Amino acid sequence: MNTSSRGLIAAALLALLVSGCAGPAGLMQQTDPSPDALLNQAERQAPGQAAESRLEAASILARRGEAAKAKDIAARLDDAALSAERRQEWALLLSRLGLEADDARSVIQATDLLDEGATLDRDAANNLRYRRGLALGMLGEPLAAAEAMLAAQAASGSDIPNDAIWQQLNRLSAQELIALRDDADELTRGWLSLLELQRQSGGDIDRLLGLLSSWRAENRGHPAARTPPAELLALKELRGTRVERIAILLPESGPLASVAGRIRRGIETRHQQAGRQGVTPPALEFIDSSQRDLNALYAEATMRGAQVVIGPLAKRKVSELEQRQRLPLPTLALNYGTAERNAADNLYQYGLSAEDEARQVAGRAARDGHRRAAAMVPNNDWGRRVGAAFRGTWEAQGGDIGHLMQYDPEALVNNSVKRLLDLSGPVDMLFLLGLPSYARQVPPTLDYQKRPDLPVYTTSQAYEGRPQPRADSDLNGVRFVEIPWLIPDAAVGGVEALPFAASYRILRQETDDPALLKLSAMGVDAYELGLRLPQFQAIRGSELFGATGTLRAADDGRIQRQLPWAEFIDGRPQPPLKADGERMISAGAVGTPTNRLSDEQRNGELD
Image (cartoon, rainbow, N blue to C red; front, side, top):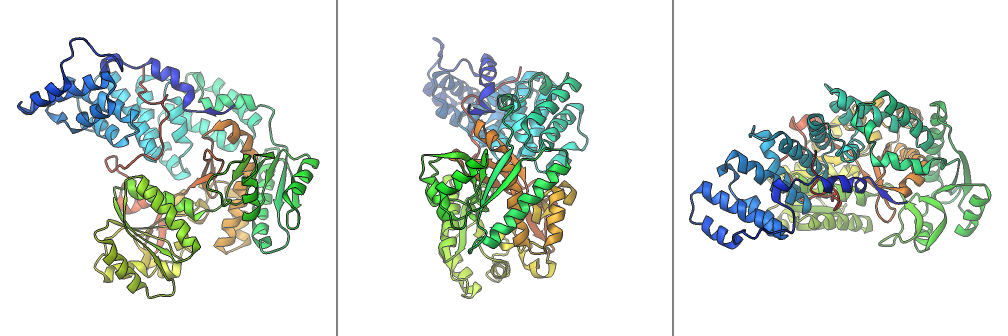
């Protein structure tokens, strides 16, 4: 089985297409005038009549299947000149075409009517709220997306958006859940209690199914009780597949032994805490991977009865696994191989990749409305890899690179920044990859170069992992990503709201070195991912809200991390929300979508 939570609502969504919105796709009425004639006519008409003609042309083109041209016309016409009835028709048409094209910008444009107090039919308003929620989800705004779809569901009582709501709720940080819980209505409280059950299940599928059954009995009138999210229903097929024994392949000697030791400590701590929280934890079988080849390691893991393998850690061994057709056991490697794509069945790869962070920075900057970037990365292999990751994502979203500088970390920062600005020309953001000692010098240098307002985005490497207000005051205004465990106040609203907070408190007391704590956090998440490998294999799109970020598997099994954002304010990492007085992304500041809709989920309507 390989189930997507999106695909299971396809039939319902497609069955509920409202013909009055734009007419059945692909059908053309015999009396339809020529769209070209209507557009030519509009050039000579008064604004109101011209808008009507253009809308009619767009509707005809949409019925003919010329969706791209129809969307372009609908997006450009003057909707304010339309009557209330025709403006509603325009909004439904443009939002549908926008979803078909994975164009969140058009959907937001169309659904702005919801904020303007426009006169809308009840069903039309609910459909626009739902579509707005889908678009906000595509833009990486899970809180706003969930709020929009919950409002639609509260007004309509429909079960149709259940999967889409569940998908966005699963992406909420603890801080965002707190915001949603404030003044929540009964519908929202029900959803949040269901989410809490999932997060407390500890990866134990049988336990989660039992909790779900009890929840449905106690919340019979809730939409999710009537029609549970497809992802939860799909877990029934995994009943009885609980992971009871995990083999962990880590080196006990050699250059990676100290790193492996901290990862092991995280695994063991989370394992102990799970047992204390009423979950039956699996048996852990630690196997020294220092001097043994992969075939011998898998043979021993199999002999010990392991159902899942965590490890190896060495990049060389992970690269070797990538070249195999299939592994004998589901495996979570603790590094990324060197192949462009993982080809091995049963292999997942997880690590603390700066390349992932650079891609996230590029996506966020594009969604913040930036279009032309300058970039600074160290002149070494690491810098080149991270720079390439930023460039690839940035350009894929329509962004332009003024100049990507590979700087000498030993050279004068002022000279490097001046040269970068000279070579870049007009830019509206700077991507910076650098260690704290270097990163702290860049904002003052921008001030000196008369570019004090140039937004700077960076990765976790610019933060030492502990508050240092005096040292980090020069980074004020710089936005960066970091794992939740190193920015508890900025990311989730305090230690108590952290994922796996009990394990955090134990491991935090053991070391004041942020780098070691980060490796321990990786061990915690490796343990949780190992427990969930059957779920990740069976249910595409499964996610873990973990100590090192929100984790999900790409199509090739590589685990991708989404990290929370923070901003240096008075030298301390704080939520960007506090700096702006609003979300980092306003509803209107949208870029190219990063989360595509499936074909089945497009055009969805509520009954």
